[in-house]
Amino acid sequence: MLLKQFLTAATAPLARRQPSIAAMRLTLEVGSLFQFLPWGVHLESIRLEGMAAEWIRPEKANPRRVLLYLHGGGYVLGSLNTHRSLVGTLAQRCGMHALAVDYRKAPDFPFPAALDDALLAYRWLLREGYHPHDIILAGDSAGGGLVLALLVALRDGKEPLPAAAIGLSPWSDLVLPTGTIRRVADEELQLLEALAIRGWGGLYAAEMPLTAPLVSPVQADLHDLPPLLLQTSDAEVLYDDVVKFAVKAKKAGVPVTLQAFSGLVHWWHLFWRLLPEAREALDKAAAFTHSIWAAQEAAAQLLRDVRRPAAKVNSASRLRARL
Image (cartoon, rainbow, N blue to C red; front, side, top):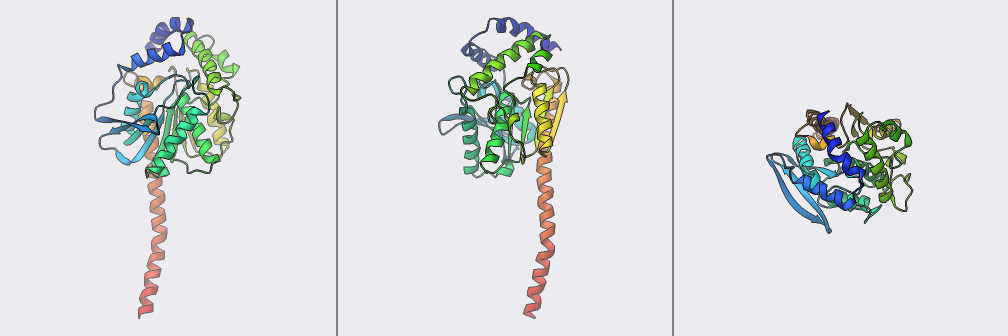
């Protein structure tokens, strides 16, 4: 509640003046100066075919397993700097290395630039020798929606899918229905945010319809996607969006875990140092990744157990043949 009041007091007057995207980007970058990686997490800046990216490597993490992270910001804001602290703590809790990428943003680079960059990063990991089953996608807000669009694009292209995906309040419907606007109308901060991101969605989609499946992945056919973890808060703008996507994905047979929290503003995961609910959410995300690896190990063990009797029969047959 205190965080919500602080954000309302700090941002509502600014939002009413409708600052430029450049001004908002600068504000976020200045704010990121006070966000630091957790202790024991190391940073390595790289470039992927010209795109800025960085490895975030927690000590004692499994180097074979990668969290490919796509940051949020309505497809127009955000950077490696603004999300580095969040990605660092999530990677540390998951016991994985993370690759974060600075995909191109609207309005300078509308759809499909961000999706193309996400595809580039995923394919780069495969070329580097990482197995799809050792990769988990993750993203928040627009980055979460981009994760879902990436899954649909990979499936439709018959490319190997990652082990799972995590959406932290993912934005999957750029239409942002009128019902959502009506629900948040009594909350000044939420209403201003909803109206802003509705405009950003148009900047990202540009010439594409907002209902195009790779722009708004809730419009896509969602069959044959890997396990998903979706987190949201009932007090944020994208709550309806997340629930709608989860319901549709479940009906399509996708294993979906939906975790709803109460009374938290959008982008609440970024405030993990201040909010115990954010730390709880990130711990639950880590538990989800551990369950994915445990399921893989159980499946591999079952396969070994099935093959073992056959191997014994073959050995016995060879022995009899020698006799």
